[in-house]
Length: 131
Image (cartoon, rainbow, N blue to C red; front, side):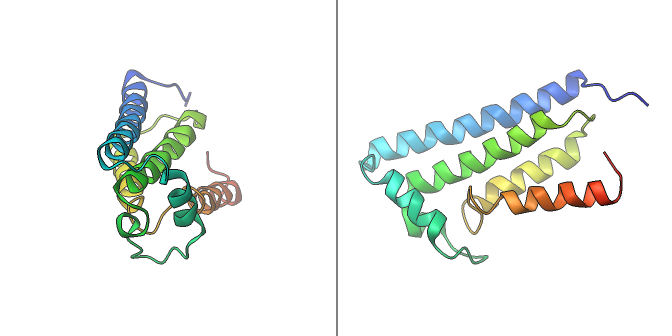
């Protein structure tokens, strides 16, 4: 079976990209409204370096702009992985996983600790000899 990127695959990838960009624009709007531009990068560093327990609320830890920025960056990480995939993707599984990552980007999952999850799936696929 030949793996081709179909119109559905391209639409899913574009949807994920534009949703992530929307979160980043919302982060910029929140930083403008609340005047957080001078603290957003130190707060993002604080989120990344803080212990990320399952229910660590990033809104309380870094503010609204920083939480939206983190969720947008996590969404872009998923989009990047989707662009690296050369297999056909299904809308239900990819969109469910994408929105789970976005939701957990507001608590417990940041742009640094997202990568072991991706590498674990890649390692599993290599061991099982799956694409």
